[in-house]
Length: 450
Image (cartoon, rainbow, N blue to C red; front, side, top):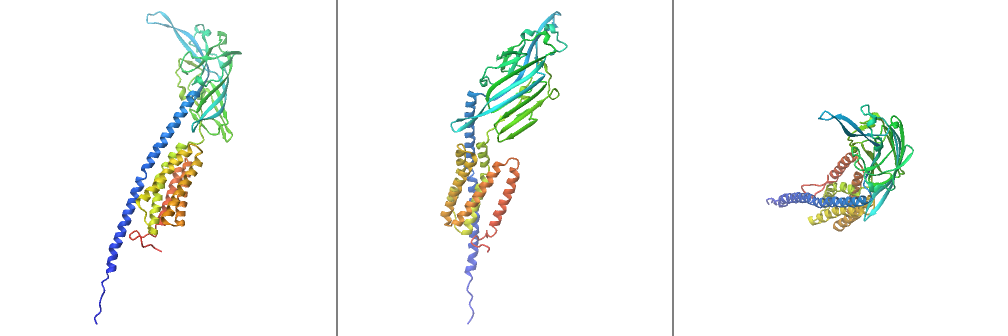
């Protein structure tokens, strides 16, 4: 009897089956990648919403501070002293021209205490402050050699003090000048240094030249966001203190000494004649006060909009890795997800940011982040449990998502080292994904390595 040979139909049939499975895996991966990009679209709307809410907050802050008082820049006292200069005119005859000097203090000591106040407005909190500033010093009345003392109008001398916003002045301002108490009133004789300020006539005589005239003034003023000073004196020292524990020292010069703690801050600035680009006698000088001002900005301890905006920037990481995790597990458990299910998971991940934004407007950002993460992770865990019908698989999703959100939270809190930590973290995440997918036979997902 001759041997018979059965055709190996099953072996030949397996080839197209493997190819078909491979094609299905490729197209499923391509669709998943496309869905990751599609689900980034809602994050752009979230980013726009963050900007809108931030602008709304700025509008509220501006509305409150405009009625209270805006940021203040205080200029220390200086003396306006007019004189007449005799020059030959075009006709060849002598003509008198009106000129003036601005005399700055020879020595100045300023001490300012800031009392912060937080005013609620709707769901927002507006940071305001009240301050009490004391300035002591002395003028050394000296005239340039080219000015005849007989041409100086001592009877028109005025002492001036610059402020930014009159609404912030809480009490009448009096200055003790050379033993006399003088009340300052709004208005300045010239705007070389300040465009807004207070002034008053003072008694200066020819006998005052080359002598020291002492002064002392206390200014109680309120404002918002910032309190600045200008160091218009030959030698000056400034001290600022407050119970506010989140100051930002800025302006033209940083403090020479500063102490910041949970109980508040103390800062000191020192200036001398060699460190300033002017002398104590100014002739028709135009000073740019903005380039000289220094001080402190009262910074809010938490900016939920900036932090939410930073978290939105990592949306592609959260959505991409979550979709990749679903894709790998569905291949390993051979229980496919429909693209609509991927979209639902992506929407849950996108809604996380609106939850974070809305809740952080009511409570502290850290607590809002914890609530939003918990809600999102629990929702996706339950969804994974419903599809894979396995609590172990759902727990894997919950653990990995929690770790991802924890990693993002760390990056949000970091400043200078955020890039370094983020790069290292992403490298570790990629390594873990590569390790988890090593047993998948991408050409035939139904066959896995043991």
